[in-house]
Amino acid sequence: MPSAFAIPILRRNQYEAFRREVGSDLANTYDGWLEYLGDRRVEATKRGETMVEVEIDFDHFMMFCRTRGRNPNLKALLYFAVEKSTGQKG
Image (cartoon, rainbow, N blue to C red; front, side, top):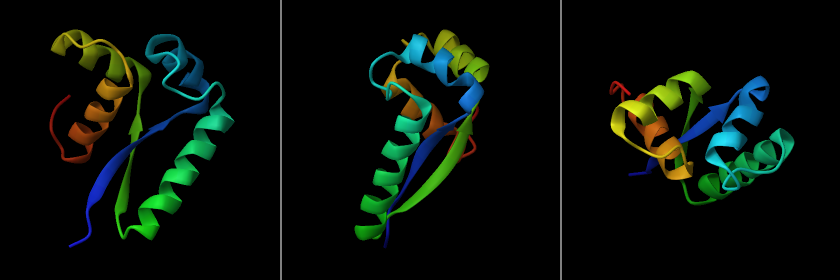
């Protein structure tokens, strides 16, 4: 059975805020982020995996981090995307 994983989709107009909070784990530019996502899609397709794209709002992500006592980093961003993709409340 093919596996699926959540990939956070960030809005262009919020990318700088994510970069400021999440830091260097994200690409330097939004276009670099899109390129990274494109590469992951190709790799996932080759492995027979399915990517579930989950739009992430900056303010909701930061609220998730505050309420869960998490640092806003890439690991937290990926975890938040997984929770949203499965319908869990973040």
